[in-house]
Image (cartoon, rainbow, N blue to C red; front, side, top):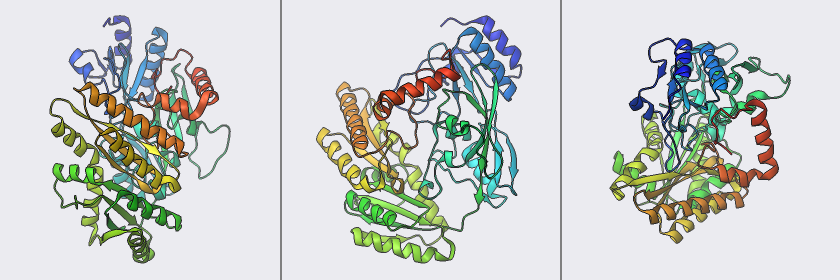
Length: 467
């Protein structure tokens, strides 16, 4: 790897603080990739860790002059390879830009830098009686900047929506180093094109986000939670369809299948019913109406075939159920390592379909796994029609890798055939470029590329991602 010392010295001049510019090969390797499995990555030539928008601007001006690719990174908790480095690139790590700039309780907004961790913001606004809803499974690790870049979701989306539903303004540094401010701090505003929405979900390909203004809500009422146990996974899906079709708005509606439950129980025992086919976790935060709402959900679960329904006795028990759901990803990584000691791994899918097609998606995933003889665990945000089939593979076995890829592709094809989308919340990154192209078609792809060319004519920002 040839190191451009002129560029290094220029960057050191712009980021003079300790650790602002890294070139040590051992350190560089720790910035190579996010948590997506089986997608390519390279070793960057330089890692920069700015603290201010001005420093980000200086980095991009230098990179543009030298025609060096820049890969924006946050906590690298992504699952699509969107933060993966390419050989010889500059990695621009934003985790040091981690200030909560303002919490305006009266106007119900917060302004943060991109390195603020999701859980940090939620706790800070909760102290003021406010609520920031998006809660990806990695909320204790993932940053707001990364959440915005992928338009992350989470377990509260069924009622409160994804990240884009809460972002109202951005500060973005363009490839040229120019700083763009878009959006607003007002409750409403429609001036000009909606550039804020354009950058949300753009995965670092159009600009580097350096400041984020989010809409807050009043703190919700305390939640009541139940868990319904099902003997078949499609029956759990039917319960979801009934609940959503009734017009109710639960604050959480999550599914966990038997494979995932068994992996979670082995990873961290918590007396989950691992002989059941599926668990449905439902919460409501509708205040005085909550007990009646939970009773209605319980009745619909039983009508759909639930073998049993348990109501959490207190908030601690409800939090434990939520914690179990958040453990699915690490638990299945642990499960794969034990199943295939030489190379166990997982491929995490993220497919969303219209909620009326959820049962068909569930039945199709089970059929595909059986046909190919591959272990697939399924968890997901069932109330959104967004499932995460997790395919267990042996990286050391070419046959296992090939079968895993076939299962991944078959699930993606099924999702699109049901009127769905190739990603509900993880983003496209490297993992789903081909599937995005199929989903949006040639004209859609041309429009995407035209926007990219207009904002990044030299293609230095996260090149090769999304399309």
